[in-house]
Length: 238
Image (cartoon, rainbow, N blue to C red; front, side):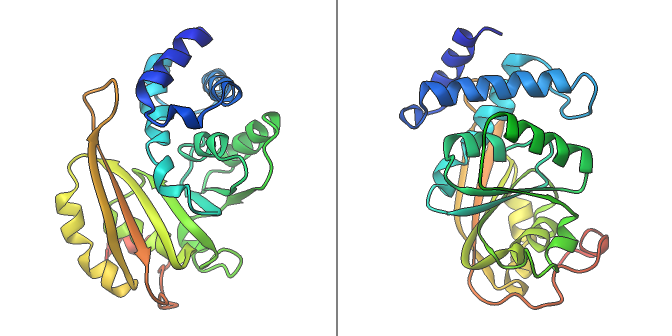
């Protein structure tokens, strides 16, 4: 894909285009090409078509921009190849962004990618969310957490909310059919001293895919027992 076509797709798909400079669009373009090239030897993404990559990875990541813009420190939980963290870091280069994944090769890839793009103020965390949430270095320290379609919502909340400071937010990027999961997470929200403050459902630009963005706020002190040991949140969701 040529840069001109890439730019046109970004222009058509990202409503807050005035937030993106030409240099930032070039960075996003370089990032896409870097991921697709590395994907030939690493398992980074199942999406190899550039047009599909733009819509399902880059534009999808940028749909979260408005929700994280007021947060200084952000953690991308289960970042994989860097979604949504890298596109958001390109958009907001001055924010402190932590990339967390349980697969070391992916963390190494993101570190290499970020260094090539001259990014600063990044943290790279090779750890499971269950373990990071019990690590004093990461527990309750971030203004905002974000995760894209990582797990069933009650499980995801137990993984992620303990990483967020009191008064901070967690942004969950999910598919379109979210009502059952929302109902199922009522107990988890009560136990984890949190509440949902925003819900947005939409169709991903230039696709027919339904998406949801859910924003939660940590209202109180989360009990120290959460998150539970690895495997328990999945086996016995709150």
